[in-house]
Length: 137
Image (cartoon, rainbow, N blue to C red; front, side, top):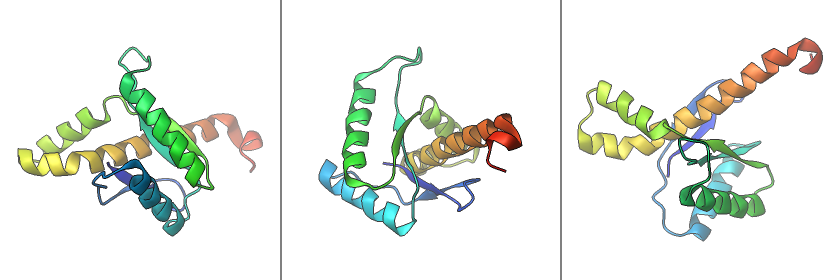
C-alpha cells in the first residue's frame, strides 16, 4: 500500500515507505500511528472507481477500509478518485529508466504521491477560486 504525507502547508506530497499489507487491523494501526506521528489533519484513501466514474468491487473495498480507518482515527477520512495514478506512476518510472523489478517496488509509493498531490492541487485551486473573502483571508 502506497503512503504519502504533505508538507505542513499542504503544498507538496512526499512518499513514505510502502506498507506491506498483512491484515486490516494491523494496516489500520500502522496508519493510525503514522497519522499521529505526522499530526495528520485528514487521511485520503484512493478510490479505484471505473473509467466511467462508477463503483467497482475494489472501490467498495476501499470504502470499507476508509470506514475502518475513520473508526480508528481522530481526523476525517476522505475517498479520492485514483483513476490512472498507477498507470501514470508506471509511465514516470519507465521514463526514468527503472527496471521492471524496481518499478514494481516503487509504483505504489509514486502512485500515492500522485494521488495526494492531485488532492492538494484540487484544494488549492478551490481555495483560489473562492477568492480572499471565502478563503478566510
